Amino acid sequence: MFTNRLPIAKLAGAVVALAAVISAVMLSINWDGAEDSTAAPKIDNLLNIMIVLSSIVFAIVVVALAYALIAFRAKPGDESDGEPIHGNTRLEIAWTLIPTIIVLFSGGWSWKVLNEIEETDPNHMTVSVFSQQYAWSFGYPGKEYAYSQGVLHVPVNRQIVFKMHSQDVIHSFWVPQWRIKKDNVPGITTTAVVTPTKTGTYQLICTELCGFGHASMRAKVIVQSQSAFDKWVEGLKEKVPPDLMVSVKQDTETNPEPLERAVAE
Image 1: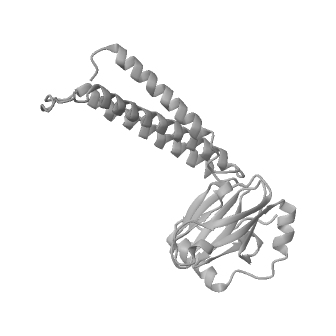
Image 2 (image 1 turned 180 degrees about the horizontal axis):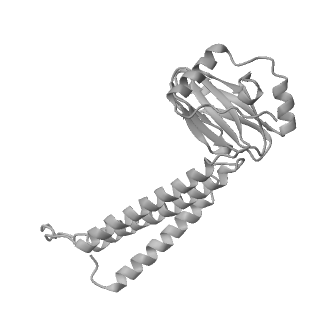
Image 3 (image 1 turned 45 degrees about the vertical axis):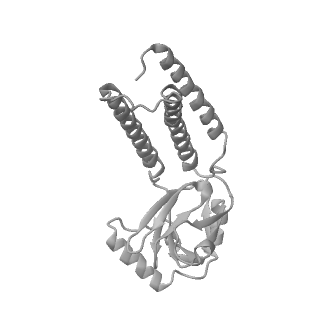
């Protein structure tokens, strides 16, 4: 494509400089907010890697486009046809091989991160999540299926395995500071694994368009000490309603992995 080394060296330098500037700007922005779970730093690091790779690809495209526009522009008054070009086998191999390597690397690294954040701890606690238009409710299997509506309590620094059961349409479970987002699909049990690392109050948000009331489908999330959580859940008088328990049994029959019952401490 290029006939001497000088333009290639300058283009390479331009690519490196532009990619560095874009990466510096993009990485300086805190895209996802506070990191309040063990998964959050790993997911944020993955995002940063994707930002750098995307910046490099974008820089290559922009620099190549700018060079082509400048170096091969038609002279004023030149209305002749462009020269016929057969192609460049090495260039075609390069622009096929490089994206393939990038995609394989990205997929492999994402797989590694996913395996790490979904690995369950023997001491995990299970919480059942029930979603329906337009409300969240929760059951605590290890506490004889104690039940709460509109508010979720979990202990800090303990892994929670959320078993999710939709009662109508597809919803999606997301607490931004935890980074984990998981769809709740009717007829099957979906699972999200989270270990909160900070106490505080958060919002659970439905991120799947589920109807007219979608924007208001939220619940309060309270992360507290284990002792405070135990005291709170012991004070719950209501049990999971029978119709919701039916959905638990039906969903777990569809999904081969049964709902685990955590051992109460």
